[in-house]
Amino acid sequence: MFEDLIKEMERMNGLSVSVPIESDENGYIDKQCPSGDCEFIFKVNSEDWSVIFKDEAVWCPLCRHEAPADQWFTIDQLEHAKDEALVVVKGKINNALRAGAKKFNRRQPKNSFISMSMKVSGGTRRTHAIPAKAAELMQLEIQCESCASRFAVIGSAYFCPACGHNSVVRTFSDSLRKIRAKKASVEVVRDALNESVGKDEAELTCRSMIETCISDGVVAFQKYCEGMYEPYGNAPYNAFQRLEQASDLWKAVIQNGFDRWLSGEEIGALNILYQKRHLLAHNEGIVDSKYIQKSGDNSYTENQRIVISGRDIELLVTILERLGKGIEAECSNA
Ligand SMILES: [Zn+2]
Ligand SMILES: [Zn+2]
Image (cartoon, rainbow, N blue to C red):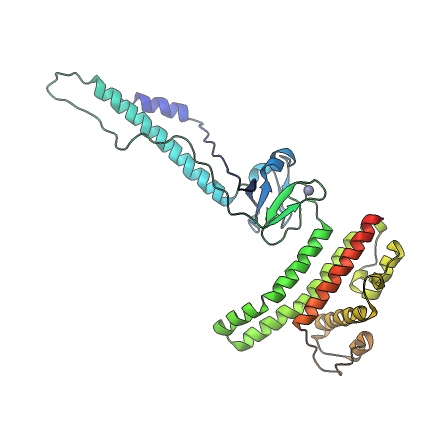
């Protein structure tokens, strides 16, 4: 009576249950970085996944971890696949038992004194897997400028998952976006901290958030310039952290310095912000004579502490954005 089950078990030896993965409405499938420290979730265009992506290597858009293409299932997809495999196996065992019971019941002689019958509870069970559902859509869709593959992320991405390419232009605009987002969320953070840990902590944290925006901007622009400058040779170490030197370096190769895109007043304002960053990084924000001399900022006297306002951040981001666009246009003309 267990022949059907035994036969089914033999058939199931080495059975592979294939669990399909659905793409979302935009045609993207979920992937997740296999590096335990990262586990970044992103999406790739399903057509590109089969045409452009290579089996040997896929890169994480956030940490650039590299692994073969079959290692990028999301944790949710793997959990779902495990559950489905179990459902399929249980379904096959159940159905084999039912078939066995049916045969057993049929074989009972009609006129015997004792009649026996077998019953396997429940109806027939499904023996196919249900596809893994796609996670919700991701807003930021990106196309790699190098290999043209399409992928989507939440927040920002530094590397193309199909070729590992790092887009200097996109990274810069992501960084500026991040600075604006940070500035915009200061008041929300302040409210939350006021209630949970008190006003002192809230004030310290929010001031630090605003102040770090300045160095975030300076570093983002430095990295951007270094990347864009690469075709023209090597710039001296940290040269793009200094405004005048940066402007001169560009003038030498694309015939345009920063005065091409900024008024004298704007260059002055940008210079003050750069000098403020220097003070924050090296003198805990305390004004010294060097600052006054280099920035031409007469609103402070020595030993005061500088103040960074939300307006400073907006000005910095707006000016850097304009410089970035100007440089990009000249570089693509070259
Ligand atoms: Zn990663
Ligand atoms: Zn690419």
